[in-house]
Each structure stands twice: as C-alpha cells, then as structure tokens.
Image (cartoon, rainbow, N blue to C red; front, side):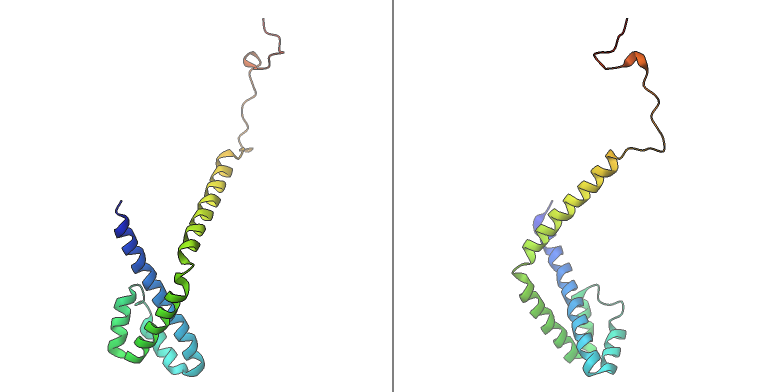
Length: 133
C-alpha cells in the first residue's frame, strides 16, 4: 500500500470535486445575474467535469473569464474547508464503518423464522436436570 500515491489520488479527486462545487456556485450566481451565460456554461460543462483540471483547461479556451471565476471560487472553498475537512473525513469514515458493522451484525444474527429449525432430539438435551438412562 503506497500511502503517498493514495494521498495524491485523493487530493486530485477532491480537487475535481471542488471544481464541481465551484461550478455549481458560479452557475447559481449566473442564474440570477446572467441566465443566458449560465445556460451556456451548463451546456458546456455537461460531461466534462470529471477531471477538474482538464475541464478548467477546456473552459480557458472558450471563456477565460469564467475559468478564472471558477478557479477563484474553488480556491476560496478549499481554503475555507481545509481546517476541518481531515477531522470530518476521519470521523465520517469511523461512523460509517461502525454503522456498516452494526447492520452486518444485525443481518447475521437475525433469526430466520421462515425456515424453523427441526425440533430438538430429546436424547441430546443439554439440560443437566433431564433424566437420561
């Protein structure tokens, strides 16, 4: 397990996600101030946002001002969440793992009443007070 590589890939995924969140913010702002541009940006962005950096690069070629705006919003979001994000991720994973384990335990310990067990054989009773000859 290469933790540095995992961290690098996680950071890239988070960066792309923050690009997506910045896009949503900019689209909401444009929806109020410039609906035709919001419509254009929505159409342009469709299916391109998986890789945030490739998306920004493509947007720079078409609308540099929008690319800069999205990058500015993305950076603002990153700075604002950086302080508490690691703790939230760790706590969230711990709580989710505990819930998954609890649900699994409930599933494996649930008694299946649709297929009742065969009646106990009287000769194999484990009751110490039973009379066996």
